[in-house]
Image: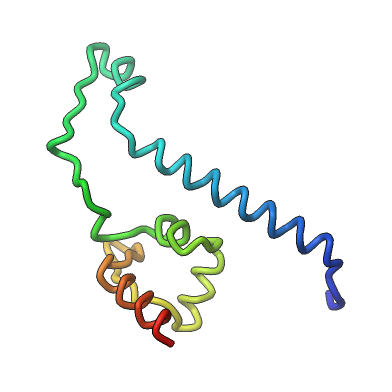
Length: 114
């Protein structure tokens, strides 16, 4: 299908994309919080919150979903970038692509400098 996109439709799609990205980030943040609520029902007892076992810094390996959220792009965009040889180079862990935090930071720094 070829042709032009109605500017109003394009603006609405961009608005929806931003809203979805914000919601995804909120949900991703909620999933990593350690309030302990809801866990007690799984084990039948009081949930224990161990903050000593959780790293305070960002993870050293990122999943595709984590990297897409950080770059604020759709995961499909990340797949297209990967296929085109663009972006930070992933490592394969058990058949899945992961991105090293250091490689992502270096790639972002190079892009800001260009």
